Image 1 (cartoon, one colour):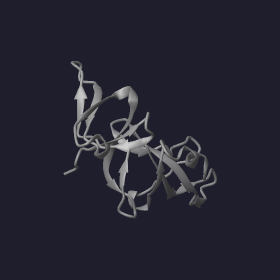
Image 2 (cartoon, one colour):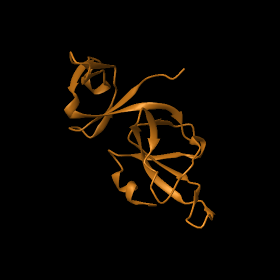
Image 3 (cartoon, one colour):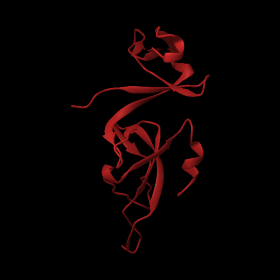
Image 4 (cartoon, helix red, strand yellow):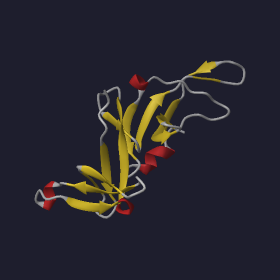
Length: 138
C-alpha cells in the first residue's frame, strides 16, 4: 500500500519544510499546510498554499532507493526509435508531474516515444533548487 505524503517548499525561506497536515477549504481544495518544523520550536504553523510549492510522494523510489516526489528532476536512459525504426537510448532529464490521474515524466513527444522502467530513473534534483538541470540532456 502506498503511503500518501507530501513535501513542501517554503517560497519565502527557500527551503523544504515538514508537512504535518493539509488544510482544505469548503470546496475540498488545498488551502494550506500545517508544519511542525524544528526552527519553529516544535509548534505547528500554518502556511497558505500560495506561499509553498507542494509535491506529492509518487510511492516510487529511484534506482538508488531515494523517494520520488512530484517536482523532482530525474535522469534516465530512454528507449526510442527513430523514423526509420532504428532503436537508440537517449539520456533524458525531465521533471516528475501528476497528469491524467498518474505520476509521469514529461518525456513523450510526437516524434519520439520513450518507454522507461522506474528502476532506471535517478533523482538528480528538484524544480525549486535545481531548475537549471532541466536544460541539461535535452
